[in-house]
Image (tube, rainbow, N blue to C red; front, side):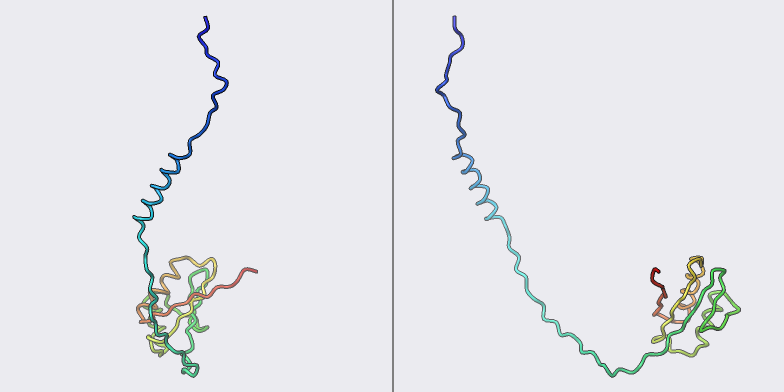
Length: 137
């Protein structure tokens, strides 16, 4: 008894027609459902720079040592509270709207001392605060 048939002449093949049909249907679906956004350019009128603008006020320099001592424009400040620092800033006679405060803090200065200087600047009405840094050697 022979249960096994020898079909040596049958060759396996992949029918590509259904695969192509499915891909075409997917392509048509994607083309029909894709929305194309139209970008428009905004017309922006840029301001002109005035190269002959008046010079700004000289900045105020506040130095903070690692042990919490403050100096304003190379003058040591006796009061290190936020109110005392604010009074020293106001005493410089600068317009708070245009004045710039540059804070030079030691690398080992506590964060609290720098925040106190920023609070003092806010109490004095200064809005432009910069921090001095130095580049890596």
